[in-house]
Image (cartoon, rainbow, N blue to C red):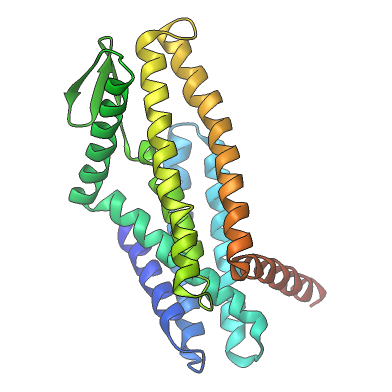
Length: 267
């Protein structure tokens, strides 16, 4: 399963790296999206096994969309025009973001490294706030004796990889524009995530909202999610204003998908 994903990401990276004059980039891209669809199609059983039917549905939708994009890229071999460049940019964003995330997910020293870093920095912040905290494992901290485990999802690597991929898709942007876009997204997300882990661990250990379990649920699944949504929307707006190419890629992809769908429906 992992091999299928890595093949997909490498093929997408090759497609996005080849010059515009190379028609073979659409072939690489097509097979990249096909392998990505295979990876998504293999995911539902694991979600169904834990009765997570919503995510099972989402990965099936992702698999179908990946196949549709593969079809569009394959058709682009015989068509000219900049309209299809949106799909190439999307492939670049998917390959860069995916490679970053899955490197941290699958490579042990990167996985352990980022989790350890977030754990240690969360402990440091909690200490600075004056709350009783101790490290009980390489990836666990305890506030007032109640331990909280930091996992990969607690590092915000998904969001950081996503924005890095989007920024990489803006090929016509200057290096300074990309650097500024990176600085207002990735470091900001990382710092805000540290505040989130600090808030969650402190609320749980100090029972801010009732019992420890109630405090955890309210903080992690309500307050943190609302805050994350607001922050990501604000960062997204700033990125789209700073890098219009990203907005053009999204708009172009949507238009292309709609056009191809209508064309197929008329056949």
